[in-house]
Image (cartoon, rainbow, N blue to C red):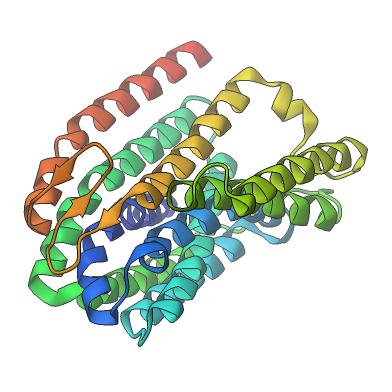
Length: 325
């Protein structure tokens, strides 16, 4: 029961990452929003997801991986319900941040649950499936979201995520509880510095396309983010129970995976920040291209990603399994 529940949570979160952008034109019309406030519907989710993943994983090791998984699924669900019922764009942006934090917990705690439930080749296969389902969720998210928006409106599409989120939370209660013995107290200083550093840096990247790279706000937040990031590194070296152990950073495989993941989050958010939503038409304008497609057509057009991510994840999982044996 553990593996299907975790994989369901992974697919749900992955779909929510890639699928929301398809609903932005409808959200903008209904809530009379455009520009930066509307872009933060997606950017706020990605920002919260990126900043909270490490915190959620560290917390899960200390207080219980099942507990964090279930709690995160409920937070994710509450955020989507709030978005579905939102009366204004400000409320929508806030609820999207809540959803992003919950999604981070689902992914982090879900991975920790698999790591503690399987060993050796079985663990590699479980993580290969997790990667596969994440890729499939990212790829089919725009397609399914486009269909749901066309059939039930953007509020209806968020309501569907709410229902599925509740099912994932209920299924999570069936998983075996586990935690790391002797993990020590949570590194609050390190956690706060990590969140602040990543939030400042991503804010600068998100607002730079609209304000300009030389704008004072962009420069100050970017510099502040770098300073806080350095402070985070110093604190981690001195901490007895660091949020991010320096030994992990020295591991090239872990570092490469982490940088790729964070750059992916930033890139998805920055893409939205660079975009301009055209009022009165269901199309998304980007700097280099204009897609004059209906939301359903846009989703179907992105479906070709499914085969690539699925095959790549399966090959990677098989390679990891063969090297571990």
